[in-house]
Image 1 (cartoon, rainbow, N blue to C red):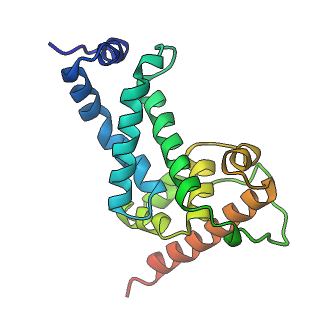
Image 2: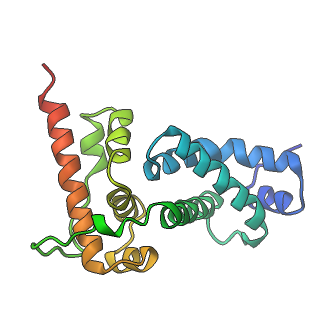
Length: 186
């Protein structure tokens, strides 16, 4: 019998119950693959991040105390793995040129419901994956994880201005691609 409660499920995993591990994976892997896909450059890298992330989840499940949601805890682990992957493989400091314009922390992110009403999810995901690693990482952390520029800068080892610049560039590129898809339907 499998536990239905997330805290019970996490406790069973921490005790080494392989059936609980299987249940946890099957319950959360599809949602976490979507998260991984936003940070990855392609499907293979997303699957690698998912696998590495769940290995980390299983290694650290004993630290889950049940104070928040298990899904939220797993998501933080997955994002942490994506950040480590970025820092390990994609520290492309040369692509982080400053823009002359200034941007503030209250820049409004894309409104997902407005975009998804016009563009298929897979198309949008492909557009995000095609961003440079630096732009993609900042865009995801700001828009999807809700991090502020000073937090992003600290996590990635860049300046706050670089974070703002990368977000602005990612937005510009995505806006151009979205416009092309929406108005070049002939």
